[in-house]
Length: 117
Image (tube, rainbow, N blue to C red; front, side):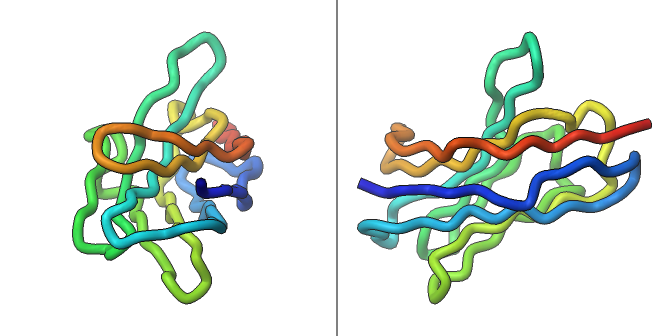
């Protein structure tokens, strides 16, 4: 089991940047993945980005490519999501998740990101 705690959300203006962090505890193996999802009001939860714990496999949703960067600090057991050039459509609750293979088996409580225009 992996426990996840997100931080770093907030209210910013269009074009600004935010950095989300996900602190993980528990058993972290090289092939375990950690990712970010988001859910806007009235919409389904959507995938944003993921990284495997060894750091050599990264995937982004098309909507955030070139603007968001996911990274991990294995010593601190954190996965960060650097979000640049934020848009109103990025407004959502952001969730950190972890899993193995195609499954996502652990979730954080979420952190709110709001972009004002």
